[in-house]
Image (cartoon, rainbow, N blue to C red; front, top):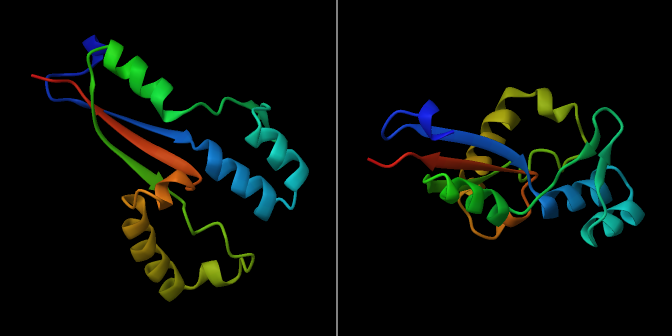
Length: 127
């Protein structure tokens, strides 16, 4: 992996966030039974993609550090966007702009990123 990056090169990884996935399963999919099972460690499943390997950020961080990459940042993605059940409003430009501003603020909030649907991990190859 290290040989693919130039000095100071960055690696961007977007991954499922376990707790966000549990929230999504319970609230958006109306499936609290399977949300609880996933919270307790069951393998997450998608009807379109099959099993989803949802792993903790620390596992990824350990792999990246083992390969001599430093963690530049971890951000939350899709913290609030998916929550409204009114999909029609999501087509309105003003709503999209307001939600984008909110998502940018939530991306770095330490509590909000714990429940975001995805995490964006940015690693860097040192000098």
